[in-house]
Amino acid sequence: MLILLVVTVALWAAGFLLLPRRPCWDAAEVPPSTPSLSIIIPARNEEHNLPTLLKSLAAQSVRPAEILVVDDGSTDRTGEIARQLGATVVISQPLPDDWHGKTWACHQGAQAAAGEWLCFVDADTCFEAGGLARILSCYRGGAFSVGPWHAVKRPYENLSLFFNLNMVAGTGNHGLFGQMLLVDRNSYLWVGGHVVVRRCILENFQLAQHFLAAGVPVRSVIGKGVFAFRMYPGGVGELIEGWIKGFAAGAGQTPRATLCLIVAWMTGLMIAASGCVQSGAQLAWVLIYLSCAAQVAWFGRRVGAFRWYAALFYPLPLLFFFVVFGLSALRSGNKVTWKGREIHAD
Image (cartoon, one colour):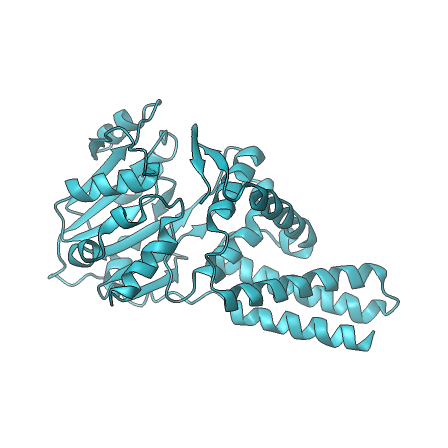
């Protein structure tokens, strides 16, 4: 029993190696020589999300040279709302057989953009006050990505806790988050742009590898205070469908060492919860469990507005994570559905 306690504590301590990176937001003003910036937003049926993003851009102290919304075959008022809020709408051409929707939309947006810097942004994100200026002030060229801080408004959204932690940990120092990419045009064209990742659902993983292979620097940070999103506000069904898509497509993309560390840490969390219930050494296991809950709470507040009860009762979102991960593993290599399209989870 003592050995198991020691092993559990060691696995808990190993989790601190996964601590999300601190932001670099120590400057708020952009140098006057900043090149022109094009914001490119791939959008498919985003009439509910676009107003938040576009209004947040309109309120920034720094204005991009242009905001392009690529309407990817929407059946709602996405294009109309984008125009009303001042964006230029690029109507997507029919989706080719060997492309996925987002990569095709990003490719067309890049072709239409006039800026020297390209910033690809998902439609369900938004910039905090002064956020764009802080992001640009930290940009040093190459590929730069900001992981959005997760806004949590409904209790069920706390089920995304371990998904978000894994997303941040799995991205690593030289990976790219999928929700935002800032890159200079020369670097983008040098690696071939979205053409080289046209078949990828989670194009950010492969793009990072192409940039690194070409000698282009890649850097990512978490975006608390500058950049945020709210994932899957449409209910538990949308949340499950969205994460199944992501995990089915992203299986095997996390670096092996990081994956092993994540598995070890979560194993420790499970042992702590099990030991607290089953073991006779109640006090020791309760203390370990509470230490795990405190750690999860700390991590959770670094990546989003996750509630205290999600951490205190962390076995529930952790079990949910494992169930969805299992479902996604069954889908890997098969077709999954997202926004009315069947896509191959390659």
